[in-house]
Length: 233
Image (cartoon, rainbow, N blue to C red; front, side, top):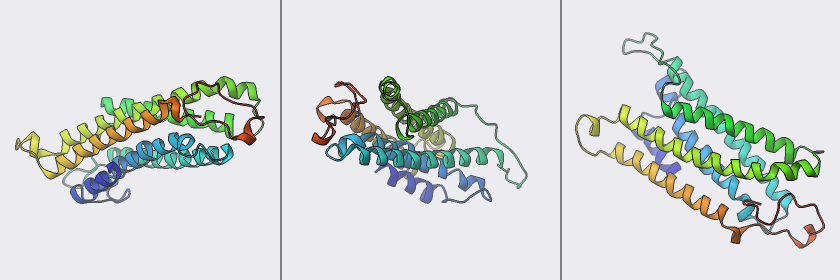
């Protein structure tokens, strides 16, 4: 629902999408792709080991990597969109009027989360998908990989909420100047509400040990990368 609403918000109330030839419209890819990628697809990638706990682990691991790779593409495209919006911004006369980058708390936390996600992706890919990594190293890294995966997801949700509030404060004049609710403000607020609800559902499923994936009979003799109390495996 959050994905649908953010798409409606950006396409109906923010004049749609474009690339660098129209920086104002290019910005609209930023919230759209962040919600699609860093919230929805990231949450789904975390849940892979829960939803497909009766499938072979190789299948779940491959799907986990594929989803994270798609998230990475969405995130980088969203970051390019917001930096282009700032750097290529023009005033009402069409003259270049760049907006200063990295001045808000949302941007500081957002870039930090993006760097952490890239680091998590690289370490996870090298450790668990790239062949040849010794089992003891995988066992050592796994608890940290799981913990940081969940923490990053939590901070993503917080950052999205901050971004929605920031955009509403800057662009929605119905409540800042006219003192009333409008459809645009309601839609943006519901994006935040559904993002919060989705994040809570993901965390409940991931952190509840009752839904932990158990090794299949044919996997019993293989090396286990996590202990019995691991969170997401």
